[in-house]
Image (cartoon, rainbow, N blue to C red):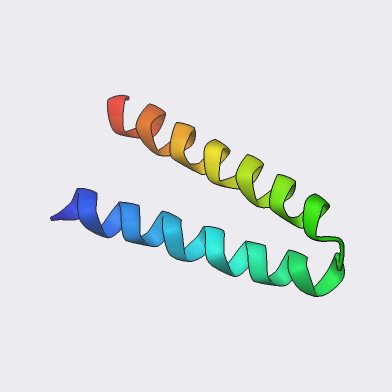
Length: 52
């Protein structure tokens, strides 16, 4: 239950950050790269915090 909520929260935060960045950066390639990096960082942080 809590894991599902955490995953949903991470996804929502990633989407919000991606939308905010898309407003500042109009370049699709840069926006996609930043979004992927943020998502990977959030997923890694989620698993690390979940383990510890």
